[in-house]
Length: 168
View 1: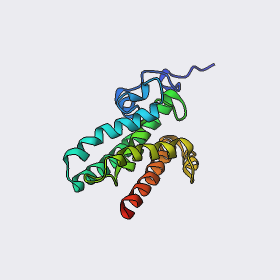
View 2 (view 1 turned 135 degrees about the vertical axis):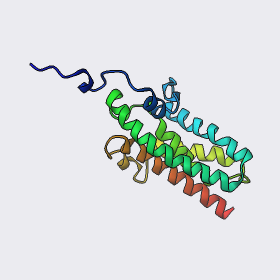
View 3 (view 1 turned 60 degrees about the vertical axis):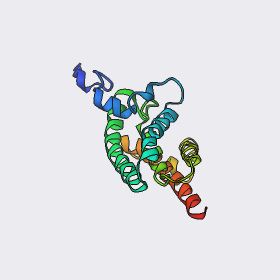
């Protein structure tokens, strides 16, 4: 009898550009295969200049700040993306970008280069298989659940690399 207004229909209307760019990690989420891996690779590529040219302290502080800022913005953008694309859409890969940056926190200039690849491999392992309570984080509502599992995967990856650095 009563029609819903256009803006009240889930997925109706044009997805605003800013949350779309954030949720898809500048659009890499639209790549046809493995958007989560592309989100993590983008994070590594954006982080690499810090490893190559910054001091360890600057690398750590900038990476940590980027994690915080993008985690907040990504949670918001992921919540918006669910309104247009449904629950936990595969193209929304900002969570992988944040998780990968977390996994890179203990990889500082002076650490062996292979730790960069190890951080990517560890993060993707934890993100894909979701052991040790990671899967349960997905039950949080909206963008919180989308982000939380990858944040925990990034933390686990960072802990392993930190332990490697500590004992080697």
